Image (cartoon, rainbow over all chains, first blue to last red; front, side, top):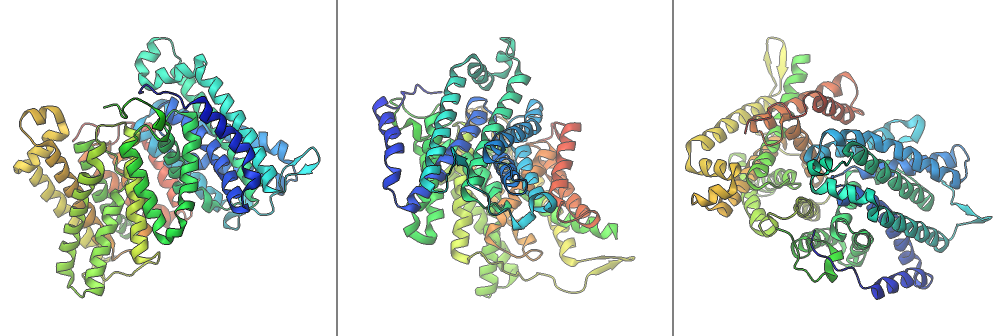
Amino acid sequence: MMSRRPAPRAALAVAAVAAVAVPPLLAPYALHLCVMVGIFAILALSLNLICGWAGMISLGHAGFWLIGAYTTALLTTDHGIAFWWALPASIGITAASGLLLGLPSLRWNGHFLAVITIAFGMIVQTLSVNWEWLTHGNDGVSNIPRPVLFGHRLGANLAFYYLVVVILAAVWALMHRFIVSGYGRALKALRDDEVAAACMGVNIARFKVTAFVLSAGIAGMAGSLYASYVRFLNPDSFGLDTSIRVFVMVVIGGIGSIGGSILGSFAVYVLPEVLRPLQQYYYVIWGVVVIVVMRFLPGGLATIWSSAPPGRE
Amino acid sequence: MLVQIVVSGLASGATYALIALGFVIIWNTAAVVNFAQGEFAVAAMFVALVLSRFGHVPLFLALPASVAASALLGWLTERIVIRPVIGRNAMTVVTVTIGLQIVLSDGAKLIFGGQPYPFPAPFSGAPLGFGGVVLPRQSLLVILAMALLVAALHAMSVLTPFGKRLRAVAQDREVAAMMGIDVNRTVAQGFAVSAAVAGVAGVLLAPVIFVSADLGLPLLIKSFVAAIIGGFGSYPGALAGGLLIGVIDNVVSYAVSTDYRDVISFLVLIVMLLLRPTGLFPNHR
């Protein structure tokens, strides 16, 4: 990629302090947006692992998100299991479903993989509509309980916000460790040149499948948080448009940039809200914004600070 | 009964095939996966709808006009949206076409609202019977129109200088440029042809389904799958893939259930890719 100067440490520190200090001052609706941005940031980070570092395309991440969300929702409502057991169960089941896409990724890449991931997402959504015995179909799952931490139910959105921030920070730290590790470097080598990476002794099959499993697990975690936050699930929220939205978050924010994914989910989630006074025009304007950002900042919002001229031709 | 189901499957498959054909034309000439391809078809539907229903223009004038409008939209797409980002990272270009898809489908929703509109059939009348098999006129018209259009496109590709330029650019941009071909102009014209083909598919499909603003993405997915089954980049493959998907969809809806139609179609896709990873026509362009 291009030579990218990291965001100034001061800016990062200000962002971190703001993430902790500002939300108590916000109006309820703005706070709600902050929670959603946090959840989507985790989801975008999980996709970035596949798109940004492993160089594979996935347009089915809403499927993983759905599996994670429904696992938590059904375990905590129908089976009365506590959130803190449902969360690892969500991560585990979703990670296992990551194998379903990890194995095809060994054989196909590029457009073929894109279509297979679209197929995966649509199949999962269709099943969640039709398997009424399991998912309650279009009625959805309601009255999902909020997590209880040290005897306190995280009923207030502010408390839940801090839970999301802590988990997001943990995912950030994990991804950072991961990327600078030999494993992350192997993934990047694989993205840049699969054959050369294989010649250097990178076990391509293992790395690709692990990337999918890990990414699915993190997406499942985001789903689990989403279920217990909104407290009502319905298959409609997990369609292809959601997968595309998450993909746009990753690309707009900056492919292969951790901060970029967070910035991207902020932009994708908050910008339409800022544009809301424009009423029905806002989605159209949002589409124009996507085109314009890609035109002038092809490396995504994360490269706003970069001194290098954008784009690699 | 089976024949009827297959024929009506072929009819909807023919429209997927045409959209897939346009999709592949853009892939071959510009190396762009165009997520807005379905919107070209929808644009033609709405232009035809406005002209015939609200402008009272007769259909035989409204249909060509709407195809021309969609060709113009394709040409503008290349000039305004695609050309500035061409040659960049594949994910950047895909995201730009996704942005365009959002603009076009939500633009249509803005103008026409979310509700479906009925569209008049060009040939009304009782279905035709052939020895016990009853076939709706529109299905036959769609299949016939697709065959004619494909023949015309093939003739254009082989016989005209424009077709030669298009094929040269598809084969190798740089060499084509060195041979004195104006690559940018050719690619823009390729977009126009591709959108026109999608527009024909749109107006053929319009009388069968209700016209609405959110049709573009499902149509794109069908045609994307068709292109993959056929062998990405292959014209005969896109056509065969589209027809196959139409038939599979229809047979599954009839024999199994409409609930699981998409699931089974996608499973067929995955099984086909397992058995024949390069598609039906891997090396045909």
